[in-house]
Length: 182
Length: 102
Image 1 (cartoon, chains in turn purple, orange):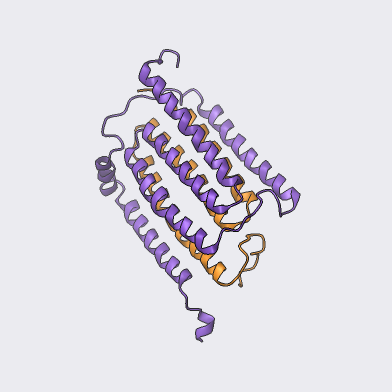
Image 2 (cartoon, rainbow over the protein chains, first blue to last red):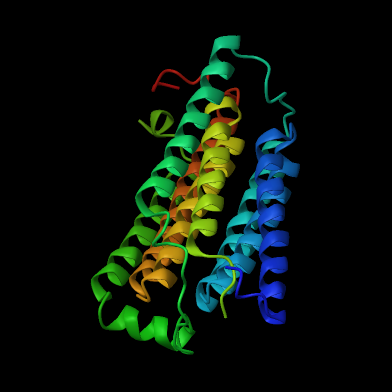
């Protein structure tokens, strides 16, 4: 790590730290805002900084899909539903029993420690080095070739999952009530 | 190019997953529970893509795209449920929604 302090390297670190900080801050903001509208806006920031992270690990197509699909389509639908339902203010730490919040913090904290300890113990040394990858790694053409050759079944199953979810959303959102018809 | 190693990305992914899990556990508005779920899924996605780069194999990125599609389906069904709840004048509070019959 010491020998690699060239100019480009420092730039990568600066971008990584900025994106990582934005990621963590907006993630905490999503959980702690009382207004769901602000939470959704913070999640858009989270997704954008994650897209920068994906660019740093040379996953260009996934970064573009993240911005288009997630921060574009999915979050617009979220904001639309929040505006339709009307933002109900809710204090994050109030309402339920006190032991419930405490148990939630303990559970999330233990999950986090467990993940970090497992990463550190099992793979600490072998995860440090990171070789260079070919220039086509992560480009749309490369992903498309993978999708249509090695992972064709996953591609088709994904399309079926999306179709079923769309049909389910239409059925859930339809105005007719089955009890009223019969 | 050698910036942060894979372990850094995994640590960030773990923090994101923990934040999302905390949000799912403590919040009671189903909309914010869905938003926290997105954070958890994105933590998993970041780990998948970091490992994909680490082992120089594209399967992780394909898996991340599949996770994205599943997240979109989950949002579709979840928001449909929220709209249906709102139309039936039920309170948007996951603690009070303890019965299946509306």
